[in-house]
Image (cartoon, rainbow, N blue to C red; front, side, top):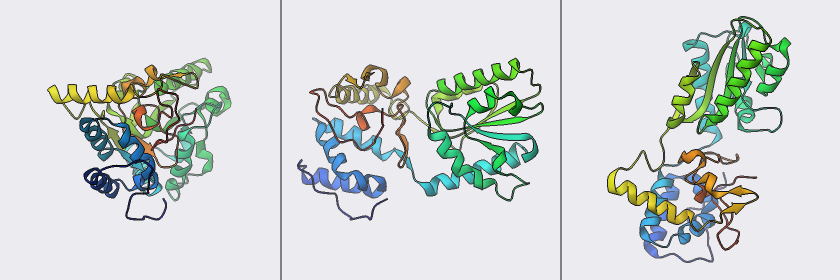
Amino acid sequence: MSEKTNELSKSSDKINHEDFIKLYELTKVQNWLEDVSIELIELWNLCEHSTERNLIYELLLNFLCLDLKKINEHCKDISKHVCNEWGLDSESTKIVALCDEKKPDGSQFFIEILKNKFEGKNNWTENNFENNSSSIGKASYKLKKDQNLILIDDFIGTGKKVNRRIEWLKSKIKENNKRNIKIFLVSLACMQGALNVIESLEIKFFAPIILKKGISDYYEGEKLKNKIQNMENLESKLHPIYKNLRLLDFNFGYGKAESLFAIEGMNTPNNVFPIFWWPLLREEKKRNTILKRIR
């Protein structure tokens, strides 16, 4: 996080005094916005009506952007849950990043921070941790009977990836005739809407952060209808295609998850409202976004 300047950065765009004060107050609550103040003003000026600006203000007020200090605190809670609540020991347990072997992702970043929170807890070592679930599933010698597998992810949006990876792993366990292997799932954060998918997997699950949908779970009735219309108006300003991605697939976030979550310095989840990270306007003009997602 850069040094705080106690004022918004200068921008070629102009905002009125009332909006300036509102954004200034917002950055005092959401400190991470101080580093993207120019991008914030650009987003603000993309709004044509006060109702759209109010929606952006409310969404950002509820946004959860985790820094390393907060992540470390949650990781301590996770290690306690694994050892105390689940009663799992180092001799029979592997903790595995949920990603596959093709692409690095946030689960590997998360497991790297998590592992030293097990230091001093009943002989846990680096050998208890694996950096991708494919290495466990494809190398049958790594699967042992009576073993516990804790799958680790940084964020669960819809639950589709989790479901796919765990069903694949279960098939590998069955294929290799490994008996009495118990699967557990841990995520730093999870959308409330994904809990039904996780529950259907019939495994134990823990996440210190459970998140609501940014619009649908906060408003109701006519107000909900108006907020949805405002977001649709804002998304209509974005280009429908970017690097072979269709905006249609990410309306209100992938799977319409309406996520308000990011980890500082990490790739933004595609479940987040695209108004915060989609980098191209309808007129094919590049825009500076408060959140970044590489494609």
